[in-house]
Image 1 (cartoon, helix red, strand yellow):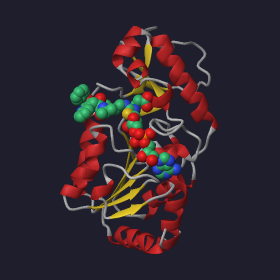
Image 2 (cartoon, protein in one colour):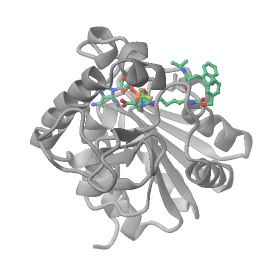
Image 3 (cartoon, helix red, strand yellow):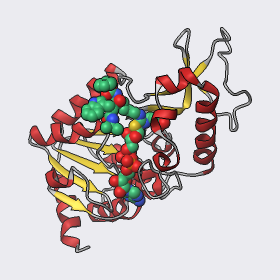
Length: 248
Ligand code: BV8
């Protein structure tokens, strides 16, 4: 890919006062976490409606937990990649930096990012179906499936936003705020298919922000992008970082 696009992306980032980043499963692909719609995508092997909906959990919590335990087993064995690392660095070095993710894998935090809006929850957290208490649980594999609340014994569920469920209103409000106020939105590794996440870049664009997309394949957002970098996040983000050559 010719370097002018990289130069252009770096120019836009350098000139920005407020930068928002939206990530999807693609940024974790190089770490070995299956995406949802890719070749080996989760939704090709399993039907979302059978596993990632409140109805599926009500019907069969054991199978749903077995699926999340399997995914935690995969994610627990992998590490953040250079794409995650660069974004963690930029949080410290670039002004007005906000990271919004659809990923539940927790790899951004493990890379050192601290200001993360997790739109769809986190696979390493559970929520009591009776008391709604949220707790971290790093057991791999889970000792008991389905797990019970240590306080009241009620069924625990993954602290994850399932299809048909609304997002946490505070997190969504802050994500919409960051999208509407940013000068540039960097959209990394998402098929831009799932709502309301996929509408955040459109809000940013409508508010006058520049859109930079990083994805090996075109998406419904490519049309709106000022700069489209067709490739892998773990390779492209370090190259832009090099060009930016921010003081350490
Ligand atoms: C809601 C947690 C109120 C679960 C997830 C309007 C129109 C149509 C439908 C709706 C609508 N409004 C609401 C809906 C319903 C639904 C929806 O959007 N459905 C879709 C399928 C059409 N939305 C909801 O239900 C949301 N709730 O709206 O509540 C409401 C409720 C009902 C009705 C109306 C309103 C809740 C959505 C959240 C669901 N939970 N995750 C879990 O993980 O177990 S979504 C899940 O799927 C992920 O979190 C993520 O968001 C999405 C997957 O998308 P991506 O991350 O983009 O991954 P994907 O595999 O698709 O793409 C990867 C990309 O990376 C590809 O483009 C690939 O080319 C690229 N790539 C690959 N390798 C690399 C790479 N890029 C860079 N580098 C690489 N190396």
